[in-house]
Length: 78
Picture 1 (cartoon, helix red, strand yellow):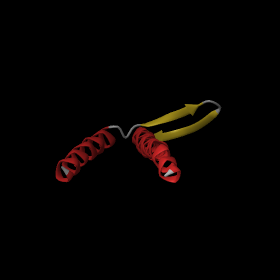
Picture 2 (cartoon, rainbow, N blue to C red):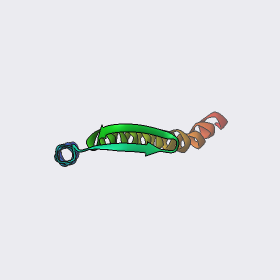
Picture 3 (cartoon, one colour):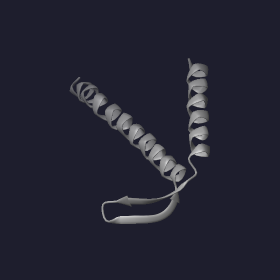
Picture 4 (tube, one colour):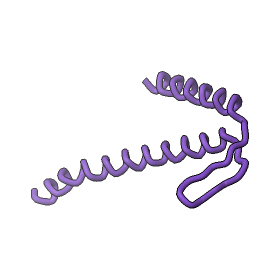
């Protein structure tokens, strides 16, 4: 199962690299009141990809913390 997960991760990473190489055009990035002039599109994509990964891991971590909380309180009651 771990090998399958690693292969899937490498495939996703490879597709992402192809996307980054093909989208190296500079664009003006505007978000709310912030403006970044002439940044390559793939940089924006990489930042969003990393933020999504971090948020996904944080969600998993919080889910783990809150799912184990009732089990800990049951052990204290015994």
